[in-house]
Image (cartoon, rainbow, N blue to C red; front, side, top):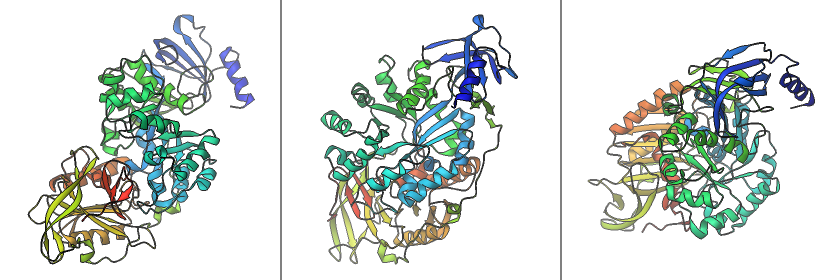
Length: 585
């Protein structure tokens, strides 16, 4: 805000200048005092000039008046942690979907597209999010690749490159530091990356699944300050008590808010509690909502409404040092949300920088959709693999063999454990016919790299055919789950042809496909159209055995080598905690 803007605000507050907008009869949620009371709010262009209890209002003049008729008025909602890529939408289509839900600010970590395209991917997100009627802030990915030496991605971001990238506009800090093992063990690469952000006084976002006790203290001493990977509410108590920011998550896959709130609702206004969506699909955004749905879930779990609102406004704004955001008060930016009650949080109006931008779940302003070259670039490169490349070669010709693989511990969680299987060997290759086990392949999709790794997985429940995807955390190499090698080969070829996405094959023929031509993870379509496509694919995958809330995202969790205990990358089966490649037999 320059001095002229400040002068105009002063004059408006004193009643010497007409307000550009007056919101009257608002049931104001004051996140500073923890009160809810009737008030009138006066705006001067993009900012709030005055907030007055109705009985004390002198009725200053305004060019325009909107009567809120007792509806609740809160600061615009802020999502403390998410990945736009998980919606498979471009930043501008994402904005179109979430603004009507009351989200006026997001802090996004573009490490998905960063792993695929490095700085080019981050720059795309910045370019595609310009001039939107919401705030889209970003963090620089800290772990590209997530663990050096254990996977091969499309780029590598070192401390020198991150140092330069942190100076880009709308960059708030360092994205989730997933290599918690490296932080705890003072790995030089992680130390150098963290130190760059630390010296620039930038935010250090954390990622510490199931990290507790001494290890948690060590991780916090290493620099990261937050965690959205809290799945157990008891862990949330320890983390909040130790000063860690807990970003309670309600994604399309991981639903952790209820457990967290049930364990921390007795705390008195913890300032280090926020709510986030992390990975939310378009169907859930359009149907259930966005961060407003997180507020709804938190209140249902027992969090006081005013505390839930604080967790998506003032708490997040102050944690990220977002100046003049997160509250309705003189001098603050006029980002505001109107909703009907303190149970459902159904958003009726959304104001951004003093302008009404959405009403009754519809956008009122146009979303700029720039033409960007990257959106027409095929970034998936694989060689012509043979059928035998998708068969696990055994050390014997025929008989039985013990082989180490992995098993899912539940249908909903992404955690996989090490397990030793006794399998048949036929003609020198592992044979899973007659079992409920599946093969999994990770194929490197980047130029000048022909890596392919194979393993066995239990409880994936691919009953027939095969599915493959390039949306595969965090390397976004091609992950294929299959029963027959010829199906895997067909998937590999087809995904490369369409530039990435999800493909289902049975008996060598494509059953269905969902293209993600932008970096192998984003669609060019609107949220509504992508939602229809994803639901169609989810239904296909359920027919093929993957009966989870979000079948389309299930394959991506197999290659997530920062989630315990055992995963797979293009280099082989990975022991996550020991950070080493496992010998399968």
